[in-house]
Image 1 (cartoon, rainbow, N blue to C red):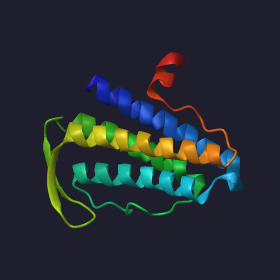
Image 2 (image 1 turned 30 degrees about the vertical axis):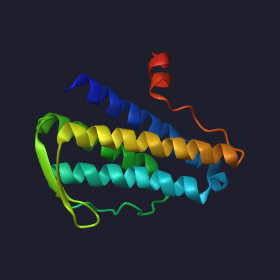
Image 3 (image 1 turned 90 degrees about the horizontal axis):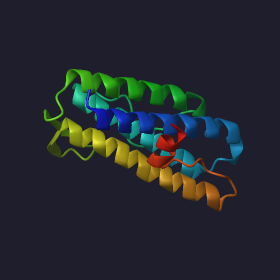
Length: 149
C-alpha cells in the first residue's frame, strides 16, 4: 500500500471520527450548515469510492444522515478506501459520470487525493461555522495528528 495515501486516508478517517463524536456530543448546538457540510463530506467520499469500485452509490452529494450514523458511514468509507488501495493501481484510470451527467477519466491516486483534500476543505468550513456559533471546533490539521505521535 502506498504510504502517503494510506497516511492521508488515515488522517481523514481519524478526524472524521472525532468530528462525528463532536456532533453527537454537541447535539442540538450543531448548526444546520455544519451538519450539511459533514453529510456532504461523507457522501462525496462514498460516491468517489463507489465510482472507483464500479458500483452505484447509495447516496447523492447532499443526502442527509442521522448524526448517530456518521461514524459508521465514515468507517465504511475508510474500509472501502483501503480496499481500493489493495485492489487498484494508483495510475489506473477510472472513467465515471459526475452528478451532472458529464463523463471524466482520472487516476485512482488523483481521486483519493481529491477525497482527502475535499474533506479537509469542508472540515475547515465546519470549524469556522462552529466558532461563529460559540462552539469550540476540534483542531484537525494534518500536523496535529503527527504531533500526537
